[in-house]
Image 1 (cartoon, helix red, strand yellow):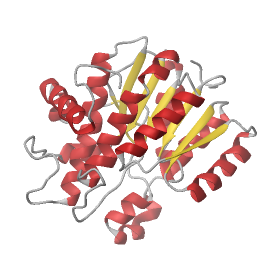
Image 2: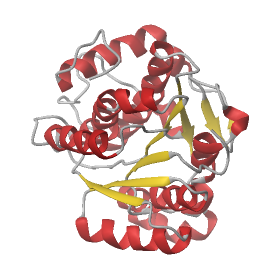
Image 3: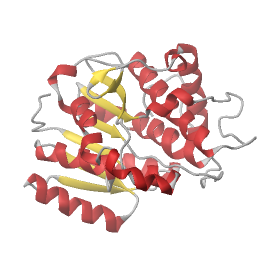
Image 4: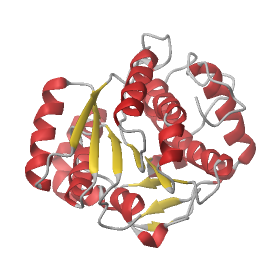
Length: 285
């Protein structure tokens, strides 16, 4: 894989705005066939047109899915496998924040469903095309918020005493634990899996968490700045073979001690497999 991305297929979730759109646009500019995974058909088509204009080529695909629905995640994975038998990069970016507890159609707490279980399920179901695209890369947009996580392992869905911001932090910790366990189960050169903190970026997920933050927009990073580490991990030859790490500003960085807990990573993998109906022992779907 080289920095130009020619001949590579890059799948990006949450690609119709913010960091996801900025990353998709830059990867397409570098020559990648870019697959936008999005919930809204209208926003997806608008983003696709913008990416095509920026990249100067038509190799931009769209797959529609509401990632809170496991059925739709499975359908999206099936479409990707059928249309792009080899995937070289999977960017896990889509995320939500909910102040009040909500459940998905599968009866899963919404932040856990979208921020963690959807990436877990999608990645597992795309292992065949990722292996076909080896050396492939999985890049997960986590957050420095993982440092404030306090997961209850007997209550991952936070049915007792729900706190939206704490659950968001928990899911960001899960992003790091997931990539570390994925890396352990799939050593290089076949696959590299890394997580990152994009910085404090002016996106709707942040403003949705606390609208007065809009007053501080000028002090925040732009989506393009936030996407730099995503693109670095997706494309740079400097990180070829680097796996199981956490990056900030394109450099490996320390994580909070709970993110280094290998037993917790294995436990999360097994619980996630149970909640998504997959085999805990496998790496694929």
